Image (tube, one colour):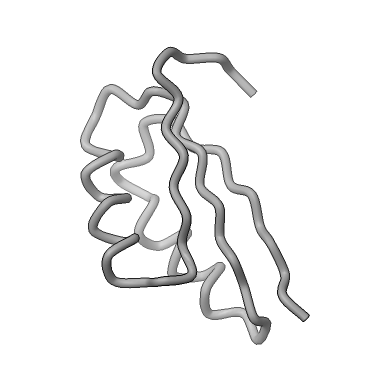
Length: 68
């Protein structure tokens, strides 16, 4: 059974790598769906790198900030 985790993020360049690492380290078959809410820092570039390194990550990018 697969566990799907939806993670909203906004301007998380300082923390996103560690957060993703901790989620993926859990003992489950995880599909991690990260929704970036139009970050203005380098979060989107970091997420793209993480997606290339981890096939269980799926990214969605909001074109405008919509809040949670």
